[in-house]
Image: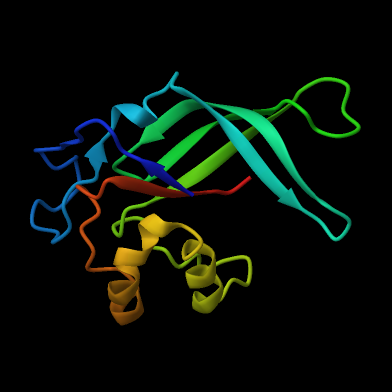
Length: 154
């Protein structure tokens, strides 16, 4: 899921302890959009064999570690069928930064073709496609890209 970056990211200028200053990849940007406490609202599209639904959701960021490409938070779904009250779930996620995580999932039996098909649903992914097909996106510098890509694990 890409998130549009509207504020200016500030790259880390110093390597973290144990990190090689010449590792070849820029440090992931810090981003105030992913700061703990930030809230977003939108819809979660849910498809099943019977029907398609769009649940109204509120998302809150609880933790973000740009050096590890990690974030976590909660999602509150407001209009879940058969639920009398909102459903709140905790999630953890990976930020696709070409350092810690790439566009290729490498789990859940997802093939590279499955991943490309998924990410291609987002117009912000299209300019990156040729490089991802070439080297899996490992040479991409996403630190100044105007979108943040992430996958939520649960």
